Length: 413
Image (cartoon, rainbow, N blue to C red; front, top):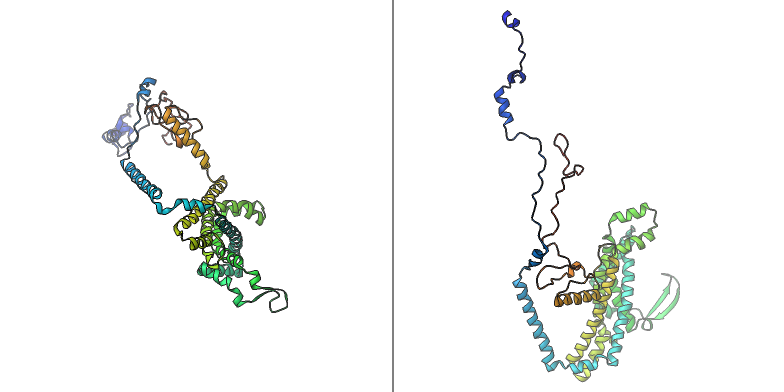
């Protein structure tokens, strides 16, 4: 033991003497060769240089579009069906188109058309005005107002429209006179029911009050579609409640209200034909009276159909511009108007026929292929992304400041 203590320490350091207890030289070499051991990250290698394409090579490329055979089959089938329909309308003499065009602008027909438009306008104003009030009542905190609004909607949506018209027209049977005054008290004015509710009045009450029940649900759904955060933000800014509704909530709700409301108005236009049961001179009743005299049933029905299509088309165009107005705060790019679509279609067709670059005013959706199939030209006439780029490949090194490429000394991003 004394000899071991007197032995002087070695001046050289071996691998075994430097290792901690229990770790030998063989284990150190094994750990260092472990492939799973983390290694220091190496610097990214520079990308290999790519050959630069010349303009002649790019111009020689030909872009081949994807083939859609079933699309062509469907298009051909629809075209054949349309040709058959047009041929039937033109060649079948029983349509009597000469009679149709003769009665299309007949004074009696125009008078009935004005009756239809007047019923639609007045009933729509009453229906949507009262429907808005009912929607606000349904959203109010008063249990009585909510109950009255719900009961009104339930009753008028349950009773058919033609039955409501007949009930309003025969209201004089139940109430020969109408009085205004205090309930269970004196009356201030009295009117004869037949003097107040004639054919036009019964038609307006039936159409307008029935429409109000449906409009109430449309307006209520539009108001509920606005995010609650809009209400809270407006209240936090100290905006009065009335101004919140008219300037913040209602413009956003109109994006939901307008499409469904226009559908209701179009249905109201066609629903005025039910008023024929009251013998009121609207379009359908007038047509029925005329073909009852001359027995030209189908031509006169086509006259009514043409006028209903014209009215519906005008309302649809108005709907497009109203929706476009309220879409300003919801979409990045407004939908093109029909005139813009027609103009762009003409420019695109001209570019295809002449082989020239597309007009700069064309949007990307109307880009065309020009140059006899060589090169895909966009609206600016420059090669699109489908072609190889003529620019040099980027050799920039990853930036050390970017969070996705920066690494610390320890190798942790």
